Image 1 (cartoon, rainbow, N blue to C red):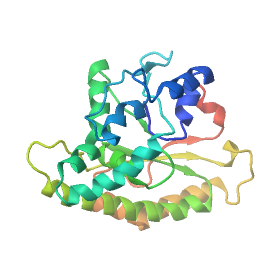
Image 2 (cartoon, rainbow, N blue to C red):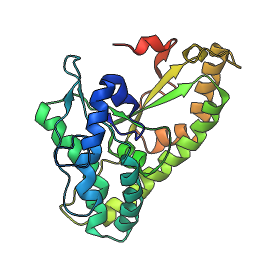
Image 3 (spheres, rainbow, N blue to C red):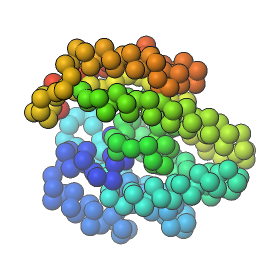
Image 4 (cartoon, helix red, strand yellow):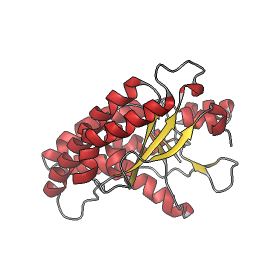
Length: 248
């Protein structure tokens, strides 16, 4: 699992607070072992990524690449790298694919079957390179009207990202590592109002019906049909009723 959210929620969930505090203190040193530690040489333009071994979580066959609040700095770099790609500058291509190359090398070292990214709830430069490098995309959806409206924005953004990356890929010099650029929408991870303990303003069955309709009518559906290969639109992978369901 890769904690790519600067808030480090996944990392703080899987490891003890004192261990996390020590990881963050050492992240900028030669002993650093967070995702930021790996990407720091790229951000500072002093070299390629640094290999950082994943942490054993204590759960069988589950490894973690710890997050870091300083990933927000790398996100700023990614916006610059994206523009450099359009100018056919090698630094742009290398910077854009740095996280992908790092994670792929770690996965190969431990012979991982799957890699899961935990990303922040935004459509910024960091999530752009993550989504474009993934095989599948799972959309967490809360049982509220804002989630319904956000799907349309997400759909438009995905279409734009994929089309823009295809332009960049066409400009890339030979031999350059590129992101896959063809994420498939796997489905949604749904949670109802029981997750927060608050009363929902829409009933769960009615919400799910609206959600499926929004998937069908929105740009997210359009991107699924035209640019993304996908499972049936509106497919729910799991419906979470209580937060305790997440406890290993």
